[in-house]
Image (cartoon, rainbow, N blue to C red; front, side):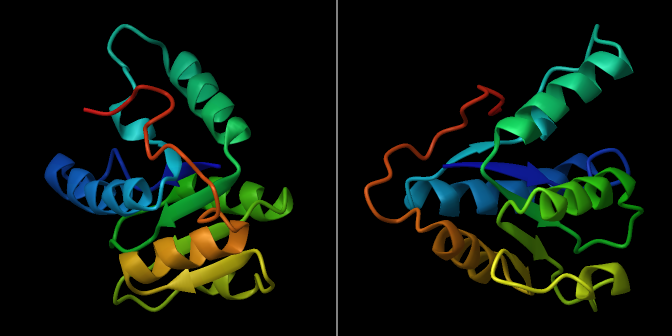
Length: 147
């Protein structure tokens, strides 16, 4: 299984973006789950279209999505990725922290969509949704985008 890690990048300070992603990746690695994190994908010397296409290819290849929605910043790209993940019926977990979930998230219901307030709870829900604890090897960044 490959998990795409979605969340604020441009409108949040780098240390905060790295901190929550580090927690998510550590928990996924402990559970033997592979991931793709676009935060560390190279952007220097690449056009916006190139970055978009690379992220889109990573998203398309992923089996599930972990999305951050816990900070008070606009989440246009993340919102689009959540909506697309739900449309494609990919298992999706949205971590909202201590914020009240945005209304658009509450309309999604079912066995492939969870809103969680804590990162460990969110990772466990995602892993449970896809049954990834049985015989999965890995726990690595498959795109080589790790810092």
